[in-house]
Amino acid sequence: QRELEEARAKVEQLKAQLTAADVDVHNLRKDFEEQARALEEYKLRAAQLEAIKRRFELLRNKLQGLTKLGLKVVVRKNRMVIQLPGDVLFDSGRETLKREGTDILGKVATVIRRDDALMKRSFQVAGHTDDRPYRNGIYKDNWGLSVMRAREVLAYLVKPVEKDGGGLPVANWSAAGYGDTDPVSPNDSAEGRQNNRRCELVVLPSIEEMLDLRSLTTAPPQ
Image (cartoon, rainbow, N blue to C red):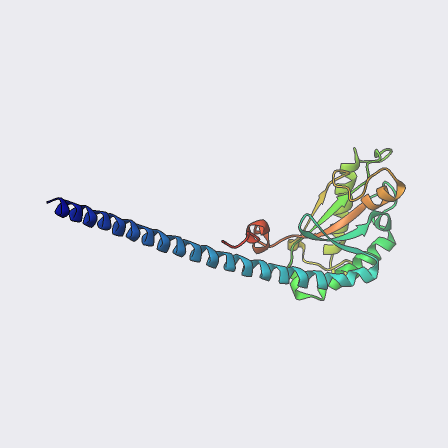
């Protein structure tokens, strides 16, 4: 009788072990499937990131030709930016484009017009100033001056070529003024202030490019 009870107990123990093993196998299979899905999602995100990088590099290469005009093509805040020196475009405290300014803008517009992909892009003209107080002008402050300078650049760029403008599509362009709120250099030197007096042509991202790139660089599952 005792041996029979021990045998039954052994059988029950084996059943419990088999049940536990079955649960472990099920859990392992579930974990494996989840890891496989996560890996496929990561591969997809990595492919998306690589495609965005390729488009980004292609855009950078297209704009690099502008450096031959003495302009800077930089990446700021995850956006491609063409920097135009304010002192080349405008006299101090003024918003009317100088002849030198229209000449350089005309060359920029020509580069964009000759490229179908660039012609389809959206741009923002961003006006910036140094932090010196704006005085003796028709605008209240640097912010007002930066807005009007951006508008002046925009107006030239979208004016038809036959009217001596840039001939760019008005629907793809906008303007904004930032005053002294977004400097690229400290304002504690003449050189720094000169760097900050500028207009930027900012290449606006498409919906695809507005993806959060940080989410695309997540490490693959271990």
